[in-house]
Length: 266
Image (cartoon, rainbow, N blue to C red):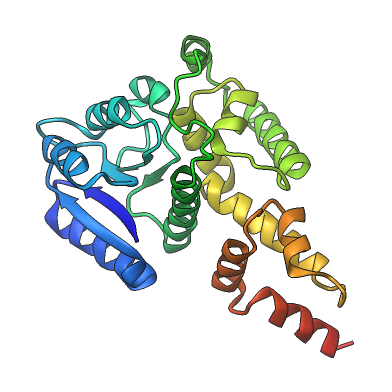
């Protein structure tokens, strides 16, 4: 069972998000709610949460301040920011936190599910002791902060950035890549990269990467002899069970069922 901290001072929004998560993930998750940043920190310490979903604008401690405290206690907790502020005014302070993603309120269902599935996958890796240092300070924050101050202009510059992002995903979707990898490649802070990606593609990085991987998987599964496990690895999912879960959410069928149905039509 995944232990999830959900912190938002707006009770209606907090309850609505908790219901959405419970509807999709059921008994596989345990949600502990917090009403502000200080409460979030107390709940985190008590419940030892693996995933923290934090609204940025909260009293007492805001979401970024709470995340900083959480990160000082755990380098492995998967942090997701939830915010109504598309200007990401707290971006500079959030650089060293290494959040998985930033979801803009109200978040789309597909984006929420994609980010949560990735958070659960990372939590599983951490539990097995094979973590890659999610949230670790790699010493590059000063370079990223300097780059954050040099944002691309509108128009052609952003088109060039979008092209570079697409090229990165095209060449690396089959590897273990993250939003942070793409942000570092382009020399942006994580938070600013999230904002930029959303502006360019009208969805977040995790959702887009998931779609690319599943589309490539569908092509590979057209081969009737294709092993689901092999296809899973070829598109960047090293856990075939996780791959099957994501594939079914997006397509409505299991990878094996998709493969068999396509070959039956030939």
